[in-house]
Image (cartoon, rainbow over all chains, first blue to last red; front, top):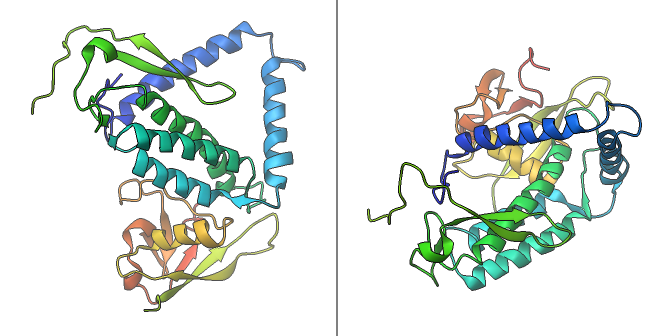
Length: 195
Length: 98
């Protein structure tokens, strides 16, 4: 949506566009299912998720605190998947996020309260953040060019022949699968940035 | 050089455990440029994950981190520790807030 120009404050338009798309898709999915009752697939999933959070995650007593995993994610992404990247740093980024996802399975939440538990919220958010973080080095490592905020020190030129396309990451049981979608060009033609 | 420590005195209240609010003290490594929110984040990250407080933007824009600091309603992200002698922070923001 922002093309390669995903810099600070563009998150606002991203929230509006992807929020609307996600909401519409969720509503269409829900309408296709049977009316809510026991045995409804969404209800089953919701109950399993509640069980996972309250019977498993909150009951872990031994393990690693989630704050150290989050800090290492932030530092690892900044160091290896920041604006200047290359093959080696992106490989390291993939490895770090993969390791952190494994460590999070053994993560503990110290705050066991059921009321206003911001540490539990942080743990659930971190789980999603690691999924999102992982899409970045995995898609960037395949993009052998530089474009917008993606600057490869080993491929410094923009390559419209091979990479004028959207990277799309799909969740799998392992690392994300990266695929591509064509870019719809309307009013503004792509041009090299020369300023 | 040994690191200076600041003592932060915080109001705690966990209704599932406590009959009434009480104060808890934490010691955090002190830096001249640190704001109250930095100290709270240090405590939550390094010492006690159950300390709970609101915050969002960290830059004085959103108002989410309002708290009583030395008895005054202020933003924790915009209040320097060096302006305080004693910090008294409710973990839920202002008396009127839930």
